[in-house]
Length: 122
Image 1 (cartoon, rainbow, N blue to C red):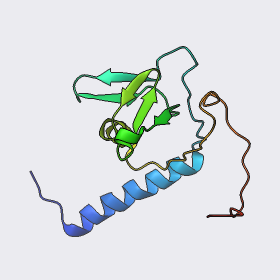
Image 2 (cartoon, rainbow, N blue to C red):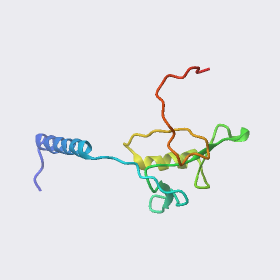
Image 3 (cartoon, one colour):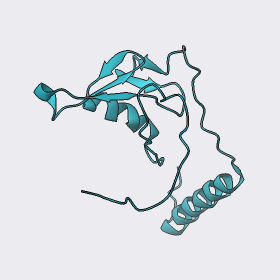
């Protein structure tokens, strides 16, 4: 098997970068959200972890005085530790994310957004 030169490796790398940028420019992304009543996460046995089934995660963050340093993230009536939750987020490595806090009974709705500086950060 012939070895590639550094210049050939760099050319292949640059072609990959150009193809990625072309794909991103042409791709219209729409976040896929699992309908209410259907499981938004599933257990991936080979990876020994939970994974999202879509691109949107609806969750409730809970803390109690006893565990205020270690919140519980509840998704579809299943409690996740912070480690389990961040491991699940790792399935989207390299992607960006937004977290929008809403009342716990409205996590299925997109809130109206406002971009501004907070009036009081006290």
